[in-house]
Amino acid sequence: PAVDVDAPVTETFRDIENIEAADLPEPHSSVTFRPVVAVTADTNAVFETSVGVIHRINDRTRFVAHAERGQPQVVDEDVATLVTENLHATVELDPEQFGEVFDDVEERRFGQTQTEYKEWAVERLQQHHTTTVTYTGDNNVTYDKTCEPNRSDISVQSIEPVYLPEVRHTTDLQEYTYPYEYYAAGPSRIAAEDGIHRCVHCDTSGGDETYTYCSNCGAIACSSHIKTERLEGEPVCTGCAVTERFALKTKYFYDEENLEAFREEYAAMPLHEKAMENKWLAGGSVVATLLVVVGLLVIGGII
Ligand SMILES: [Zn+2]
Ligand SMILES: [Zn+2]
Image 1 (cartoon, rainbow, N blue to C red):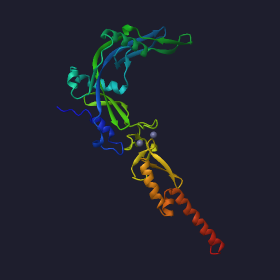
Image 2 (cartoon, rainbow, N blue to C red):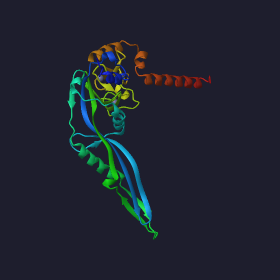
Image 3 (spheres, rainbow, N blue to C red):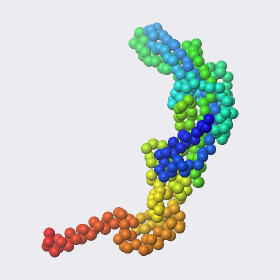
Image 4 (cartoon, rainbow, N blue to C red):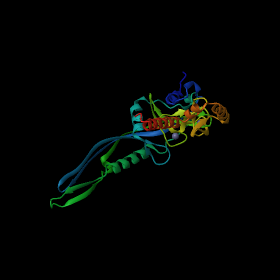
């Protein structure tokens, strides 16, 4: 069956101004199967001193960790949720079947054995649950006691090794390449990197910002790095625009040719139209004229 693996990219480009789905080239798409372990463990511990029980742990913990070579790394909470919610729906990994829809398929290996991950999980939970408790003794003196559960207080209920598909699309638009990366499981996905909602000219990314595509150079830019091309009235970014000041205001052009065409247009304009090239200036001169008129009326004894 034809799987539209590019759909998330098309969808992500939907709220970029000045570019339509039909204008998008096919992205380069790759999938990496990343080994993760989903751990469920119970910790039960009671801490007592001569004054009685001072601390209790009765906790079930679920967490997910990247399990490639090197030290396991606990994944972000939303990725962990994605994994645990889809654990019931795992399928046998057959990388070849993905070769037809993705340009590249990579399968990473588990770095350690299941027993080693179990050891690591117990140690991690030991640290996680260790806390300092302050209590008052019979002699009315305040004590601090570090409560660290024993290894035997922690029992790993399950440790499930699964591959989490990480999909990376890169879309080339003229001079720029836009990456979009997400983790996928079942019908859900969690974006890992969104290089589409990001201005190529500054640090602005994500959020409520409006991003606009510059058809002159391929840039996606934030609202402060997008201007209106003076001759054609279309968006152009500050990175590629050719500029010149008219009526003291900077105007933006796709290229020298458009600038030259506008110079001629401008030269032929009547004065008041030239002034309109800087609306602030035009507004300013209207105010000044009125004041003078009022002044003349005062002097003439009319007011
Ligand atoms: Zn910007
Ligand atoms: Zn541009």
